[in-house]
Length: 76
Image 1 (cartoon, one colour):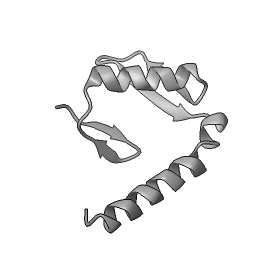
Image 2: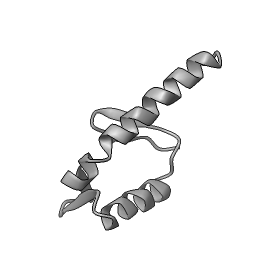
Image 3: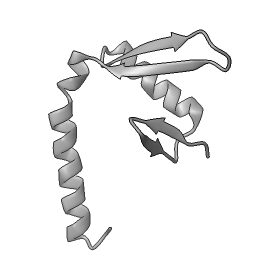
């Protein structure tokens, strides 16, 4: 499985096709912008939009809840 980098962190367990599909959906909903650089090999940057930033508190709350849930269940 390929690895992708996001803000200095490596993403694992997702195919290039699925990652691209999800990123394009987020772009269509106005949560991300996409910049294609005309280089070889092709390079694409995604950036979060102001609308996308409004989702951060909800996502952080879910992440915190998930970590607490895992600890209570005896997970890592």
